[in-house]
Length: 482
Image (cartoon, rainbow, N blue to C red):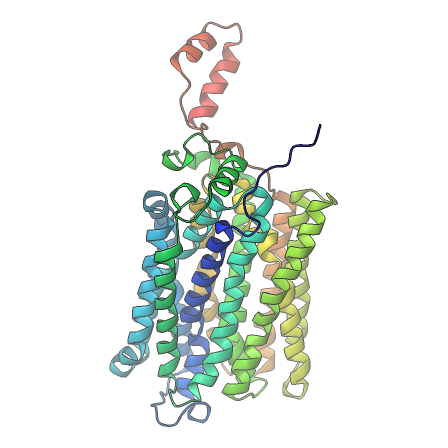
């Protein structure tokens, strides 16, 4: 008798198309979010941009306000996003922030000419409010489309959009600023890319496999069966187990490890151009291109990590938890060492500084498989809400780090001041991963069960009440209703 072979539908099915759409969503929104770090340099240094456009005399503190203002709005909508995506689905909710990013990007040059750095900061706050909806949607969408066997692959495809967006934001922004479009062209290109994605999403995006007009029956059945969703999961209103979630050690481990990543991301993404311009004395064109190089390394290395994870899991060398923790350790502690080294380099060692920054970013690419996808492992039913909380708390630090850097780095060309910034980031990396190693897990949590808060049937309650084990029955009811 031949062995049963599971029908998974097409090898490259609609679930992969959804992951590619998520990749593009993150990519275009990251371009709109991160091009500000290069644009601000172009707006304040006449030698680094097309001279046909105005240049502004903004102080370091004012530039820090601009860089951090996005996150002032960003953290406020993380939590509401978890509820919105549960109510309306990812297709509607993810469309809104991307369309808003397109409109706000197009308006950026006009806001700046009208109100200077204050108006620019306000616009960035509003963009942050909209983009705060994105990642809870991404996680919810992945949870509904990614069977466990495909989760690493689909997750890496989707989240590598952040690396691609970072590369493009850093790499092309300097070229655009130096072209006939000048620094306003950075915003106009961002707006166009966001609008193109909106059209693609409206045509091809679907909240889940059963609602997709493109998915075949075999692939739909495979997705639903592999995640045990034959019971009408998509139409159920599953209560959120708040108390159990907030008293869960693995949940707090996720909060800590992702907060550490948020701190590091904001340092590398927003401060790299300033460091390279101040300490390494690079002009904006080469600054932008070399600033993009670390994120190109992240993009490429994310697929290397994926290949490694696939081999480890297919050959069962490690458990899922051990695999994720091992990769996350390389992704956090390797960059910590590189950051410390970067702080001791000056303009005479530019090549080594760029090499270390590239190694730093490439190693850090493993954080996707190492800890982001742990959210879906732990709680596929509440992944949007969990991601909203984790990302909301984690992005408090990107709000604060530009302000902190503005206090520490009073002279952008001071190597000793940048040593403090990079040393603090390395310390955060080390502590964040240590907490994850001790308390993190990929085990699906008891509070994620569909019936965790569902009351027991009356008949079962009556049977428990008359049983000889009344304390155990009472414990059962308490566990179900906490």
